Structure formats: structure tokens, C-alpha cells
Image 1 (cartoon, rainbow, N blue to C red):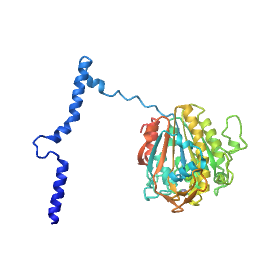
Image 2: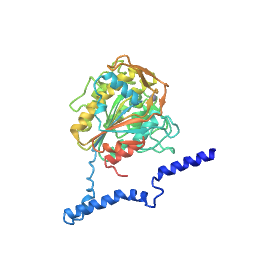
Image 3: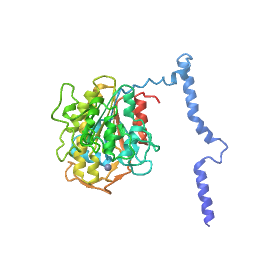
Image 4: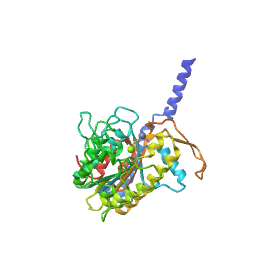
Length: 400
Ligand code: MG
Ligand code: ZN
């Protein structure tokens, strides 16, 4: 009985595949060849119409134009900025975010070498060097060799380089672009690396790791002799004289938005861009919205939204510059999602938003990548976080 049913089902299946299986006419072959036959007929007709000109040559696509090289790269990392973090800011903002201006969007997978769930050190090392490392590692290979970073490659080709963040400058995300250490919490060692690096400017907190060190060395001497500018008034990033107001070089992290950081990141972004763009030889600038992540760890939706909107305003400054400049590739992404954050309910006007969290840690959710400017099209699709480095090299014409 069951066998008979199976046989019937198979017959039915066969019948569906071959509607004319009683005929000897090669129906399938005919259907397969039909589009090709139509194409050949069209070519014959076209040839006749334009006097036997070799039509195939006309049909062939033109040689692709040489893609424009990105002279500058502005890379913006929203630490812990997943889709829901962006969505919450979008709803709360009640006007389009600057993130909505980007023509190209992709998705990255974020895992670390030794862990499905990355930390900010492995995440930023992947962006900065194109290599997967274990969690906690700052741009160092397994056998203890420094991994060359995209920022260092820009310096090597004669471009200026900078970092502007809302955490200490020795924190994992910025550290991975200039420092090479086995463990992210080696803050004094990372400060040493920064003070002896080829950076041209940085803005962030962490002054105490430079001038109140356990080895009693004052790294400001090194910063001065290397010509590295900071937000510290004495080493103002402004050309015509010191800026005694902001951005200050805080001893520790700059405050959160809720605690009154104000327009620190916007000033940092616009001043960094104008300083680095001043010599016309290109620049690499990494700007981080460092504290979106901390809102996620604290399961604090209000903090996430405040940090997100602040970061998005800095994105607007970078986007306006890139749009006017025409030679700047602007890429915005995150190292990972934090909190397993979702929006569970809320009103259309942005009121009464209720968020939920699945963890106080990071999650392996894929992360969006937004791109604008020369080479932006390289950033569409779904790919690994290490690809960001290779795409930067390709877009800026840096050969191996
Ligand atoms: Mg960070
Ligand atoms: Zn985190």
C-alpha cells in the first residue's frame, strides 16, 4: 500500500517534470535553447540593420573606468552599535539620522579568533590589521610580532593620521590602530606605544597614563618631540594657537553624554578633519563613539540613545566634509553589538520606548557597515570584519 503511494507520488513528480513525456519531441532541449535562439536571431537582425557591423563588439561592455582612489579615509566606529541601537536612536530622534544618508550598506560578521563573541580589542584589531586575533590582543600576532595597521600604512605613504574618541585614548578600540600589545589592559604600555608612534594627533581621555606613570616617565616630552598633538590645551590641535576650552585631555574617560560631555565629539571630529586635511597628502582618521557600548553593558536604553545621537551628529560632520571634498571615503560600523538589545514597544512619536536586553555582555549579531565616497561600493554585501582592512587598502590604492 505504502509502496504504491510512493510510486504514485514519483510518477506525479515525473509528470510534473516532463509535461509531454509521451511525445518524442525534445521539449526540454527546445525550451533550453529558446532564449539562445532568440538572441542569435536578434544579432542577425541587428547586423543587417547596421550594415554587417560586427555587432558582438557593440554588445560587449565598455572597459570599466579606472576607479577613483580615496585620498582620505574617515573610519567611524560606534562601539557596541547594533541595529537596535541605531533603531532606538532613529525613533527617539524624530528626524532622519545622518546614518540614513549613506548610499551603500553592508553587514559584517564579528567573531574573534578564539571566541564566537568578540571583545573590542579583537574587533578593532580585525579592522586595523585584517587579522583575527584572540580577545584582548592589541594588533599583535600570535608569535608576538606587531601587525601593521591601516593607520601605519597611511603614515608610510606620507599621509597624516589621527584618532578621536570618547574614551581614554589607551582603550582597546583606538589602541589597536597604533599600539601592539598582548593584553588590552596594559594601559601604560599602550600609552608608551602611542607616544612613540607615527600618529599626528589624538583626542580622548587618559592623560594620567602619560604623565602619572609608575615608571615616573613623562610621556609629554615624547609627544612633543614626535610632534603628536592632543586635545590638551598646551598641545592644541588648532593651528593659530591653543584652544583652552575643549576638547580637554581628561585624566580618565571623558564624561558620558548624560553626565554632560556636550559637543566634545563634534568639536573633536571637525577639528581633527580640518587639521589632518591641511597638507593635502591625504589622511586616515578613526573616530569612535566609545560609550554606546557602555550603555549596552549597563542595559541602559537612555544612555544608548544619548550616545548614539551624539555619534550620529559627528557622523554628519564627517559626511558633510566627505561630500564637499569628493576624495574622502567615509565608513561607519561597529566592532560588535552589546546587550542583546531590542525595542519591545513604543509610540510612533518616539514616546514610551521600552527596551529589553538579553545580556550585559556583547553578542555575535551581525553589524551594519555604512559607506560613502570613493570605493564605497566595496563595502556592500556580507563579509568578515577583517575584510574592512583589505577594502580600505583597495579603496586607497595601497599595494601589498
Ligand atoms: Mg571602544
Ligand atoms: Zn563592551
